[in-house]
Image (cartoon, rainbow, N blue to C red; front, side, top):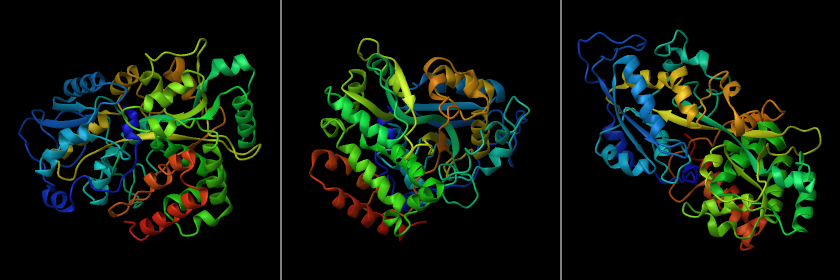
Length: 455
């Protein structure tokens, strides 16, 4: 389920500082004298009889692909994989990690409600994997860095400390933007808006027919929307100022414009959205688009498989567009949502885990993942896609610019969350319990706190 992944980036640490700090173990264990398999690149080369523990989130892509990739990795390297895949991965691996037993490889992105990954970031308990970029992909003759698309290892998604070092491997990526029923637009003769002025005009036209302009599955989905909008109103300079909590950022023209657009958009949002803003009911908000009750919703490419069995209006056809430009001729943006894989600093078999990480970019693994709809950021993968995915991943070829990055890491501040304040506060705007001025003031207050606690 992707909704939980995009839920609030809560700042409450999932594991205590003392437990994480005290349990870190930087040794590599379980070595034997068996010759290492081909493709081994780092210092202490892993033995072929070694077994690594891999923990992966089961999302809308399913669990089977992970077993297939693990089997392919073992066949290629001889390294066995003890695999755990679960929808509530934190609940499965969290207790053991509190006791000092860490998986060797974890696929779990920041931005989930439990904030486990954030806890490891803030405690600096994630192994640096810059060297993986220069490793040869097991079974191939190219390096990981040569295969990963440009720009996918140059943001806070992979380099959370902005120190020029890589700590996260960019895994599956999805263009995030606005999904809609292309069949309805064709039936009504409506054009997809390319600017916000056109968006408001369409919103008024649709409301006259009892159709709301907008809905979001959960408020967490508004984070990627906000990131793309930040690029649209002020380019990468404004975006970087925003995610680094710079003082006065909301007093700038771009800052005021972003808040005004989002506040106005909430007046065009279906009033039932806040009621379904939770992990149990979020698909009801998504269903509004399929039932022609709403025109647009922010989402990622996984929504197609997530709603595959859901009923839909006659003639329904998925459509996808970037976040509109601020003015005619301006830039439209689509966030490339990037999932993260990492190695805990306390992992026992780091070298073998790095081999597994490198294997994620093999043609073999990429093809297995793609069969389930999960696309790796590998050069040329977009040319191999068909159907809806071919439409979604072509957004950048059709004029949209990619937006990447995330909030700067901070030390834990109890009860303080920029996502809950900024995105969660949108529910209050929809219901009328919060004014735009109150919402903006709360964002400034939280950012002041986070700025003082940046790592």
